[in-house]
Image 1 (cartoon, rainbow, N blue to C red):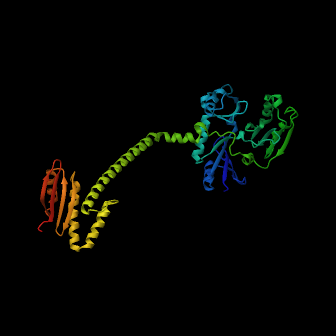
Image 2: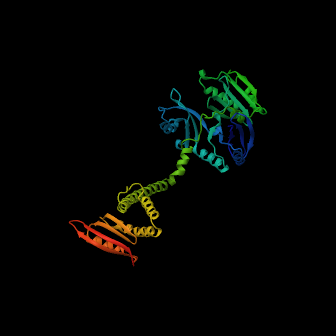
Image 3: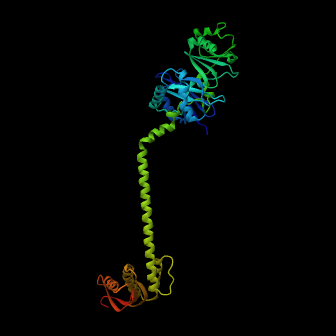
Length: 419
């Protein structure tokens, strides 16, 4: 799927920003300059999944240093102090971003003031732009294919590309002097093989200084014109992972999410713990209810086997009892079947509540149910009689009761009142 990528160059001060919109195949879709808020509307309307921003090279120092470690965390902590001799001002007020460590333990570094980082991010956020990368423009300048230096002239500005990920932003009127100073600071064995001067747009009077004899100390000079502005040239060759992305460390996305998460962390932890306690309580209640249900099922099986001697109690005792009652109803008159169901429905719940009982036998004939029981005590038998007679719909007669050493055998008869 072809996607669109927006690259814009943040101006030094408020005002229009140069921009280029390309698709993932490299085709130029749109370019020019506009206000940041309108570019944000463009990014939302296209839509643009990736917005990358070039920041002014005059505000970012690209340098190199030697470090004793390759550990990313240790490197990040050590960089400001390794660069202390090269920097003016308080290192704590600077944001240092390392590039990849080279074989000789030297590392390229981009250095920018934290106040500038805050200002750039606030300007982008105020306009509604969510940048995936802030890249120093001097780190992605077009380079000479033969390894020389490349001086780009455009408008009031000039840029000098020294090599991969390394460059300078210059004042165009003083470009000749500044390039000569850079040559003088460069060791003899590291001078470029040539200097390529590329001009976009009309020439300026100050450019004539670049043509003076000996200005570049005998280094060959090649000149050419470019129909494309610098930003379009950069966008054509900008790698997916630029040499430097300033949105790392305290300005990285992970750190920003961590900052947003921190005030809510305690509340979320409390909510998670409360949920865990609630789940534990719920699990305990479910287990307890399951145990109680198992006890009731066992009691119901006892009643079923007593009511239907020789039958096999298994599975769901409630369904077995219902099925047996239906069979009884179909086997006799509707009135007799209904009467038996009513008597059993009255007796069974009461028996389940009696501790330590056992039904020895159950006999039924219309209007009357005889039960042979074994109970713990005469007191339990008396309590059973009282509970069965509640409601005055049923009468209970104790036909016999015999106390043994640790139990009582009894026969009771349950009838509808008035029969």
